[in-house]
Image: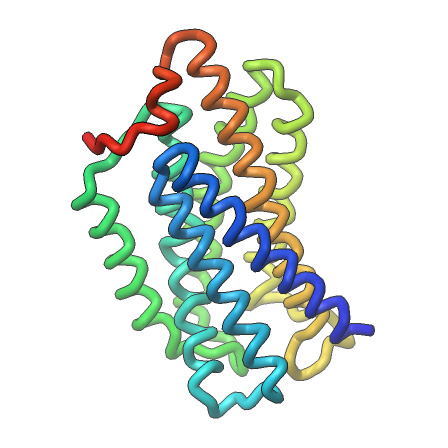
Length: 231
């Protein structure tokens, strides 16, 4: 049963990442969020393949999994997420150089931080992950407030709930293992993958609501949705 829950949670996250990531790129030309969503989905695909092939902790796929994990926990679903959402909160449109630079930063962080494995607590990296998550959560609270202000109360509540769930996962990840979980932390990863999938789903819907609101009040042109221009 635990393995089935893990597979379903991972498949859900993979779907959410690729599907809504593509929509971010196709519909809004938001490469920051679109590519990060797809990177999370690729991470989930790698994780699923690793599990199906027996879960060898000495194999290549295991190392790749830690790289993707560090990539998104350090910069991807923190700085890149905030910068991407600022498109609808502050009309922030980064240049191509900024896009490339922030992903290069995430790759560098992933390459460095992937060496700190979950078999023991590494206080420095673990604390860093929690700190950047807290900073991101502050922005996401503001993001939820913006949704509430435009009357999207359901999405505001949903965004707040998935943000809280994501923060719980971030704190639990290194500091509070689930009692009774197995050596591969199947229960934890099932909860984490499901949560990350719902975050990507809800944040897309919330982004769309704010974008449509901005268009309706003239703060953003409807043509921006399909424009490939970069500023």
